[in-house]
Length: 202
Image 1 (cartoon, helix red, strand yellow):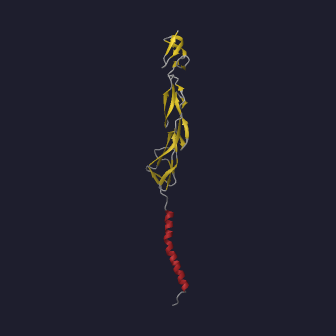
Image 2 (cartoon, rainbow, N blue to C red; image 1 turned 135 degrees about the vertical axis):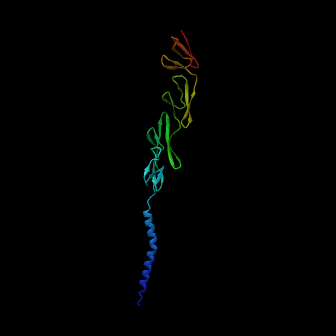
Image 3 (cartoon, one colour; image 1 turned 120 degrees about the vertical axis):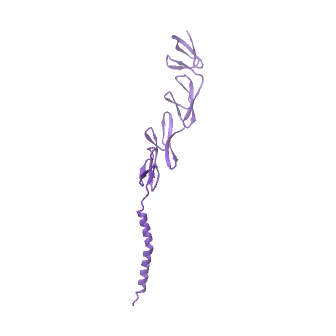
């Protein structure tokens, strides 16, 4: 019986080895190709991979995205008076400066408006600057608005309280004269005294 040439045997063996060693690699690649990205389950709801959604029960201005079974905030903003305000944006409203900031708890991002350093106070429907004396029109007392930080402020009286001139709808400083009606009588000369009281003659 004739034997095949030696080179033929060697080539056949190499081919056999190559086939045996390549089979597990091919199987692993096919297994990876067949595996699909996992969906996300949030509050009993299913979201497919790469799908964006809003977290149930929270702001519509925060968008999340599912990535292979886990979700993260794709973009977010603060919801304020029915509109979405971008993170970091600052705007003024009712004499206050507000900024949109992000707070994270248990992988859930919350966006909320927080006051910046107070720069004005609201008095009788108008905004007055900090540390600048102004007169309260109804009490005729002068005040200064002082910041307490993080949006808070208080009014501190400055000097004695003046008098209210009801005839001319104005405030009169202490030791100044003005006209007034007192118990049905008209007085042309009334002297304003400390505390808002006044004395009329003639």
